[in-house]
Image (tube, rainbow, N blue to C red):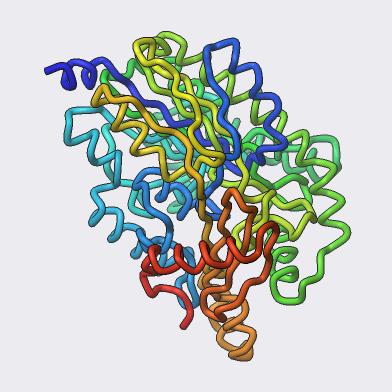
Length: 447
């Protein structure tokens, strides 16, 4: 009865600040004034969005849940099917568990990977928005924009206008014209260099939605805001500059001086904006703070020329070390960190402990991150198939990075060799080989 009582009182909020490195998250220090506790050395289980989020809600590493990149698994095709099937099999992790206990679940995301397209289909209500070239700021306005965009796609601008006139929907017609003019003005201003549309990537819409929405308690709320994710420059609105840079870095080991310069110049501003937005979002939820467990973190960081560029492939500290702040409900004594590292795979066990009125454990002696290669679109399938097999083996390979008291090591599972060892080599090698056996890879990577 006591457990059920606390379950009915507790709300859970997980806020993901997409692509925020730990060392650029200093703006989150203001969370301390709202009762949040900072935990050290949080490690993301993967260097990009989808496998990291799945690990966070299932408590499993990528090789265990099987939702990750691989040779022949394209992000816009096979990965959609794979992720949908596996998430269903896993009951959506802690999301499914809480729904089965009677929780309402809200998924609000500016990232298309965290959407029904990739199997995030268990929710009471969801809000999925794009994160580039946003023309609206209010939730209802964006719903109208989506409706009108669909009509324009099917009928063209003239056909849509005639259809709205025929239906005497003059209000919508007026809004269509306003969106059309606004889009043209923004594109012109962007081209002239007098406007930068890359900073705001949807958090205002999410904030508007949450400020007006009465959430049915108890609830689980998953939020993904796309700050401090790219693009970082109007030159990269389609993110082609980013993709070319990471592709060149992976295949040739060479970094684009221009991209590194842009990233190093602009990323700090985007990261600072991200932390401000996160704090504003939490203040929007202020009425729920006392009886909520709130976890604020990032799914991964960003490389700025320090071991690579962009994200999604490399296993480096700038990608894997993320901020972690927790606001415990009023009846829970904030636990001390019991180990030097916190893997984001601990999130489900933390939630379960608080719901069951048990002392939550946070921290461990070891944390792991995994990568399986690139995550390209199917447009590159023919080009990838033309690469030499040796290149494919090198690029689409299962790598594991282990963080332990003795230091950190990166091990190439397929080639059975250590690529980087920083610390006590003997202890790290022994521990890493032991962990590889425990991970039980799903076999989805290039063999």
